[in-house]
Image 1 (spheres, rainbow, N blue to C red):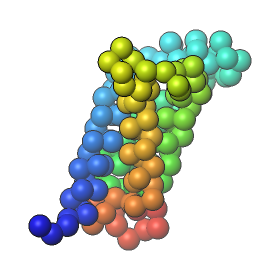
Image 2: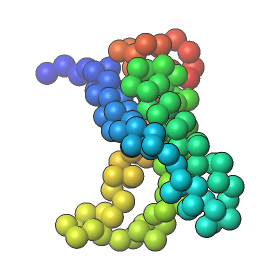
Image 3: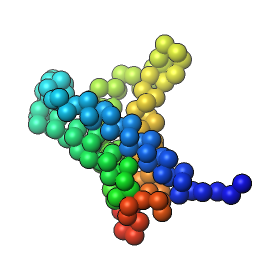
Length: 132
């Protein structure tokens, strides 16, 4: 069987982009809970609006394959921010099924990291820029 790296990258883009986009859509009702968490950590509450960039705009760019590497860098920053804001205590924890407590966040982070290094492939809207 021959390899099709571009199809594999498309599947990864769809998985990473679409699944995070659902998290972003859920936050369209407001970011008040995130503002509260930020304030509780002594951070400015306006940073909560960054969730729209990291969970809606970046995933859409990844899905379409436009500036995939740049969008992945933004996406990665969102996963790191979520980790440090909410999940640091779970780093070495397992869930009730024996899996890593933050495995979903880890998969989002690692998927975006892979796209950052590979780009979106030939089955993307844009393929000729260094950030594609």
